[in-house]
Image (cartoon, rainbow, N blue to C red; front, side):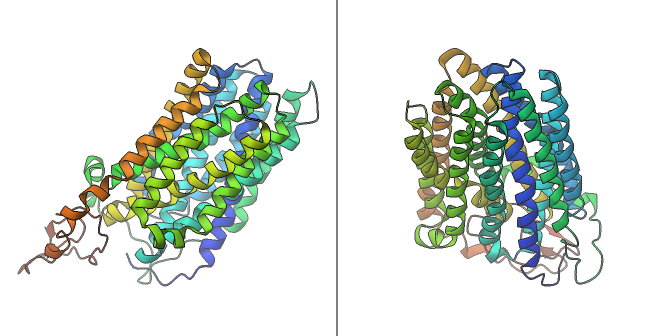
Length: 438
């Protein structure tokens, strides 16, 4: 599929829309935790509710990715906005923990729909050389939402002693209104192909899911993304619990979460020069290593100002994993399965968002609130070990790119992605050095 040159205005509008959508979710997540606490939840119940947020998306990601691979990306965006707004608003009216969990799942499904459509749009409308930069700019929208959302939630929830249920519900209603604002930037955001309307691809060209996962670079990108997102998610869900135990007010907790997000924004704005300086593989490994050590340090009994410094450094390290794992997965995956590969990455993310909070809740119930942060540190250190593996293969891989031009075939063209010949299949040569050898 070829598209006319779309310029950069679509990316700016997508970043704005994502800022509103992510801001709503980032406002709602701590508000859900506070409302659950007001309804009598303990640390274990908060972990379960945070896990339900990812449960419905866990089963919906791959079908949505398949649909996007064979059609348009933009329709998923308003659908996601509607589900996010509904999940936020109805969480504010819930008066039991099962209801809170259910509407949290609806919110998670809306967020997944929006993100699959948006990430597929970036992959489809970005030149290969621009993908690291464009995914970095795209995730700035998420960071801006994570910067503003917790502060707003903290201000709305704070200052009303004995009224936590009412103020947390107000924060959720405001989050629903913020989510609705994102639709103002979505008009004609997807550019049509230069040769006419988007055409449905033949189902016979679908790449099997296990074939995508076996492609070198896809599985490691998924795991790194899972580890980084799990750290961000548990920080958002459990820092209010830590604050309650350490007598840190909800307003200060909101500022701490926003410091983490502000550092992530700063990281993504300077990502391109960092990649030039260190290389993608080294940058991913070093950032995961630093994030693992810093995340484990959150378990220490630090004062609020020291916790702020720690979270700012942690946010900078966590800023690398998401955009680079997106571009890594997109460049490694077959061209006709990029949206599915991104959906598999999101499935891994949601699996982590189900398993990590549930595990964190169990650990918190047994070993205290600090234990989940130690668990996250171990997970991030494992992702650093996975990220550094390509460096060990570099000497042996040096000769791989040489034989990439196959001998000419008389009646069939060779696919640059799958390595299989098929009549009428034609695609430009891939230049990613981490692409698997046919």
